[in-house]
Image (tube, rainbow, N blue to C red; front, side, top):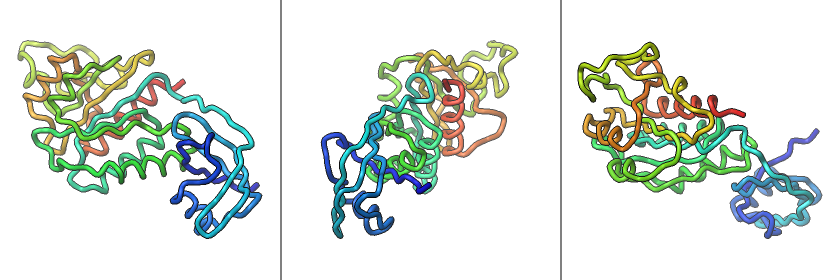
Length: 253
């Protein structure tokens, strides 16, 4: 059976022609022809089975054969907020792999120890779209502009809020606080153990130099909860991906 190719068309149901970049890939790279079937996704949860009706060097027209809605394979709204890495490739790698796993929203944080304070959202957007098509999803995650940490944690969010950091709890709160049986990393509980599958989830991941103590305390004062992502010391992009994976795993339907 011939493989069905996926294309991103935000207004697929109202349009009859692929966007220029998607048309170029369809015609020049894949060399698809009139009569071939393709699958369109609008990024908002719908798939469209379509047939190519006309092809030129720069254009590809189609007609819709069938519309279907994609149901997410996870419950709730999964949001990851991370400080971008100094090396752009690592941040882009994270965005690609996180979308393959499945999540709903991405925010980049400007933190005290951030190594990168500017991010090109248009590049990340393209990577998310590519990963969405590759993993046969119909929902594209929300991508937010970079936000200062202090401003971000003061906002209202639904569901559970967590901050993953490398400090011992005694460095953040009073030293006489005892750890319970679930703690595995300096008094912090493992994220998977405290996630509630019936609630939305937001996890913060800091830069390579970690959040500052003051940032962690600020987050805790606004209802965030300290968590561990395991016993290994992880790079920023790995930690963020582990957080996405654990959220997705816990919320899988």
